[in-house]
Image 1: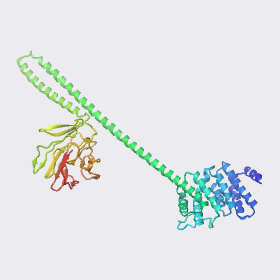
Image 2: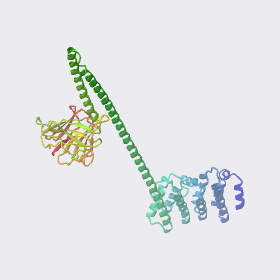
Image 3: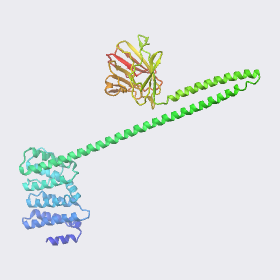
Amino acid sequence: MDESIRFSVSQSDWHEIATTCGIVESVSELMFLTEVPRIRTLCGVVIQLIQQRGIESEENIDWKFLLQHLIQILFNQDVQISETGKQSLLRGIGVKSEIIKSLIELDIFDKTAEQLEITFSIQNFSQSSVDSQTTYILPQACLLNILEVVERIICTSSELGKKVTRLKICAERISRSKPPRWIKGVISSIISMLEDEQENEIDQLDQQTSIQQIQLHEREISEQLRQANDQVRISEERARLADEQLRTSQERAQLMEQLYNITRQSKDASQEREMAKDVAILRLQTQVDQLKAENTELLLQNAQFQPHVPIHLEIPFHNNRQLDLTSELENIDPSGQNVRFDRINGLFRRAVAQQQKISLVIPLNKVIRDGIHRCKVRFENCNGDEYANIFVGIVKADYQIPCPCNPRLNPNNQSMVAYTGFSSHVYYKDIETEGNDHFSDDQLIEMELNMITGTLHFFVDGIQQPVFVHGINGAVKFYV
């Protein structure tokens, strides 16, 4: 009979035999109803042959149709029938990926969880949306057959997703309820594999997150490099224009000097012409002096394009309407490589940054404990794009300011209040408050510190800003 079946299947269309003629339903029904062992065995052989030919076939097969009958055979309460279903499913798992996918879509995990709940009388489970085919308690051997197939699916598949949630919860509850020895091992194995699968999913998610963070960091670095290249290109263009202006001025000066020399060589003319010549010489000399002055000014302007940022500070202090004529800027850079100080009226009231892209904080040496004080500041060549990338504010008098220093960053922000023109925000500790105006080069920035009320107000070109600081009760210094 086995040979005749093999011949028949090999000589006809397998798909038509498996689906259209109803052989699978008929053989499955005969297996369930017969009590004759030989007939039951032959039915199992027929089903296994049909499944085997399906595995070997290259046709597009409706695996759900075939496997739903094998699942019914697997969940049958007759041990021999269940064993036949198990063996058929185990042969297909691992050979065709479509078989595992179809078994998962046929809710074999939920059916198994439902059967475990019935067998071990577990209560308070959420009802499955899948209609149960089993309303009876299966024998031990049948339940082990089912768990063996489930274990093989979990071990083989890597895309279980949420399909195993109910089975995992059910297995964990059975494990905690001290189950019989015959099922304890396979339950523990299933739980372990599901936990490993969950850990793998978490590891993959962490890896994807790390990759995304690295890509974001790379994009940020690329953008910073692009901005830096743009700034370098702009600086080089400005330097080139300054060089051209300087060269033009020098050529004009040389031309005027040549004219001056030619004029001086014509003294053999008449007295009247001599007098006119002297007047022309004087006029030319004046023009030469003017051109030399312009040339010197252009040299100074060209020097401004070198990598430093000059900061001009006008720092009158007012206390009881008295002008402070003693306070000056405090040097926090003994090396002299980062900042240069210039005297104004004998006091260090002007600071010039020697390095670009280095955050500097330059305090005044006056410690303020009482009274009302006002400091005026003006910046030059400090704009980044449109606004000044500069901080002004106050610092605790006993804080040792490092060099370089960024008032926004720890630990500096624990002892500093900062107002910046670039973002227009006010910073203190981890608090960032917006609401004030931006400020730029050449604008007059004023800070008014009232130690009577413990407040600090900011002004831009005489306009008081809405965001201010209060609660100041200790000795402080102004800084820029």
